[in-house]
Image (cartoon, rainbow, N blue to C red; front, top):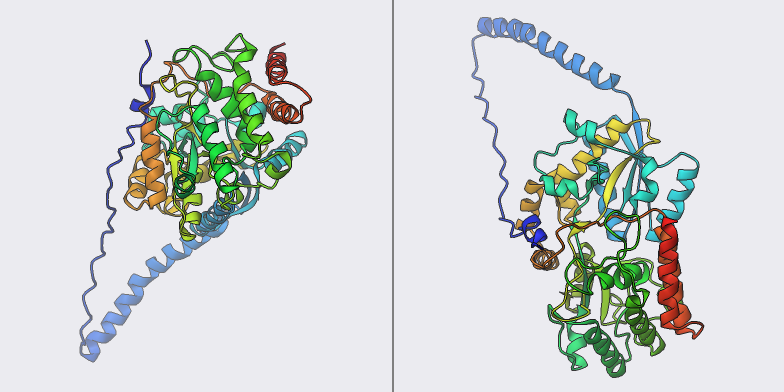
Length: 471
């Protein structure tokens, strides 16, 4: 029997709270004394000061004896993410003077190109960011269970449900989630209205999506939809297959990650055909134009050249604010479905996680930073949920109280998706080698656009590529 698993997982009707500061007590003012009494007081003060000075000197000596530590850290993301992460790193260094963090940041593709180079040379960053493709790098991840057990990593304000989203099937804690996340369609409200196209509903279909994209393109000359870039596989394979049949009947890979989760390759065909047609008609960017999208901040929706884009919803507040400054209004729609009354195919999962590297000489110090990154309210008042809704209860409450309009829409959207019926068991992991399947799938769609293969052939090729992972 299916259950609304994520409705329980995400009761994200978070109560807004206030955090106050306790004031210190004032010291009484000194009064003037006769000369003799004054001399006595001076001697007394000197005697009292000596142990205090000795304690201060001891503390300074202890601090200076702490080993200077340099940690290396890297992540991918938008310019906003780069800026705020660099800011909190500086905060951490001030709180921990003996720790220096050297950081690097990249766009998504460049990040994993660099990571693969470091894996080959056993020089992976001490702290590094990973998503659902972590199995490919599992040999370079140092599990943090021991640091949780010792208290180095504080999980007292993180529920077991949120810890499990970054555990493997054996309960090893791979990292801590940077935030709860899911996918949606961000869209320009005014562009829809200008083209006379109805706004998306919570149960709209892929046919509705394609129809809206075409009409907006015909009426405005803009792209109806931006490109899906690296998420094309998530949309057209992982999500699209899960939307067919009954809830939980189909998945792209099976739960055990040792084979396929559906039998008919042609279940992929309608999506491939739809995407190829939109590109052919100019309602969505071709491969050349799509290469111009280097991060979410220069997506065609953000630049005003497209009405919609696929988005990880943690990115929505950033693009909402950018467009609001230009007088434009963005909104979030659910991912289109195969049938309006069919499964949503979407789940709440970890946006990404921070991991400790097997190559690190300072694994415990790396774990300390990850704990601070997830648990510090001050840190997260800067990060503001840009990587996803925080997993720490206190942090989430603090951010909810100060949420911007874009952030409120993100919170509300995740709450909505959390009410959708989902399979009793969900496996959001991916098998080693999936990256090549993803890349090939994107190329097959472009080959359909060019008339080199049919959508049916692209579906067969994609299925065959995926099956090879288990040979």
